[in-house]
Image (cartoon, rainbow, N blue to C red; front, side, top):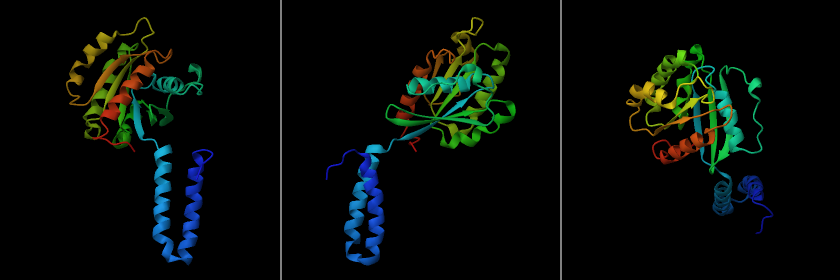
Length: 233
């Protein structure tokens, strides 16, 4: 049977399910044949349309640039998406969600609120996370220790063991920001505690989109490599 387009397979599966339920009521002799055909059609449909899903947490202190990073990432990964203007972005209270298809998989970004009182909720999302983007505001040296403490606390949670991490050294477009080498130096003790997980650090300007795509691309590759340990959803 020729299909005008692949989506007709999905329609056929739906129709066939209905006809199967009717047929089962009247003719038990056709049960095995019908179920086999339905299974075949469903398998074909899933093969064509199903995409592995990965969940990525975006964490960091409030005002680190998490939502700006997410908006930039969505715009980079989906040319049809128009990112929010920076002045329209407000402090995240709770959770922002972003979904995009990239490199053959469905990425689900969870941008978590970074205020002190909201950090206690981060671990509620760890069990489903396939990767972590931790964003550091390199322009605010007064909060670097606070940011590193929050990062270290998250990494100590055993639920995140083995989950790849990309550290985003954000706001590198600001002249007074910490250099990447300074941030690495501040991170040196935490890096020792990362275990065997994949980890990388990128200098980023989420505002201008610099290195946003590179950091996400690196993480997706690491997540795929880690799929035996934490399979896609």
